[in-house]
Length: 317
Image (tube, rainbow, N blue to C red):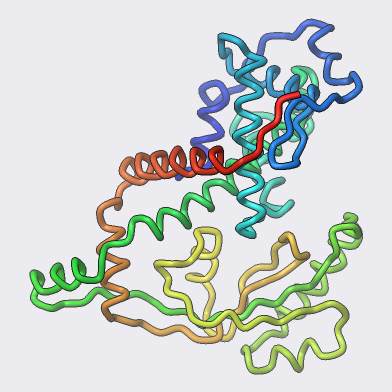
C-alpha cells in the first residue's frame, strides 16, 4: 500500500487549503488535558480529540466531528498498540523525511508546514503521529498480507506441473544486524548524532560478517545479531530496496530505529529455486498490480482492526 497516497488522500487533493478556525477552537487544545477514552490502558484526551477535529475540518469533513475524531483516534490507538506488540517501529529519521516530503509536495518548507499545523489547531506532533501510524500500519498489513495470501503447497505443485515442472527463483540473503544501542531516555539530538557517526565509521570499515565482532570489540553498547537466511520475497518493504542495492560483504545505510542506530550487513546472497519459492511467487502473482494490492490490503486492514476491537478493552469516560 502506498503510504503517500494514504496520507495525501487524507488531506485535500495534494495541496493544503484550510478554513481558519475560530479563536475558541484554536485555543481549545491549550486547555488542561482530560482523559476521554482509555484503549487498552492508553489514554486519549480532549486535546487529542481537538487536534483531530481540526484535522477533519482541514479535510472539509462533515457530520459529528467530535465522534468521528474519537472513533479515528480509538482505531489509531488500537493500531499503535498492535504495532508495538509486533515490534514495528517507524524511526524518527523516517518520520521526519516523510513530514518534510509532504511539505515539499505541497510547495512549503517544513517551517511553513509547522506554522500551518499550529494555525489550524492540528499541531505538527499530531500530524506526525498520524503519518507514523499510517507508515507502521502499512508494515503490519504487509506482514499479514504475506501470511494470509499464501497459496497452499499442493496448489503450488499443481501450478508447477502445469508449467512443465519449471520452478521460479528468488534471492536468499544471509543477514547480520549491527545495533548501536541508545536507551529511549537518552535520545537527545547530540547523542543520536554521535551514535550515527560511530555507526557510519564502522560501516565504512566493514568488509564481511566474519569480522564484525572483532571490529566491535571494546565498543560501548554495540550489539551484533546474526539474522540468518531470508528470501527476498519475504523481506519487509523497508529492507528490500537497500538490501537489493548492497553487495555481499557490505552494509546498508545507517538508520535510526527504536533500539538506537543500526545497519544491516549482507553476509551472503544466492539464487534459490524450490517448492517454498514457488509457493511464495505464485501466491504473490494474483496481486501483482497496485489496484489488486490496495484492494487486498484494505480488506485485510478492516478484518485486522475488527479483530483488535473485539479483543480490546475500550473505556469511555
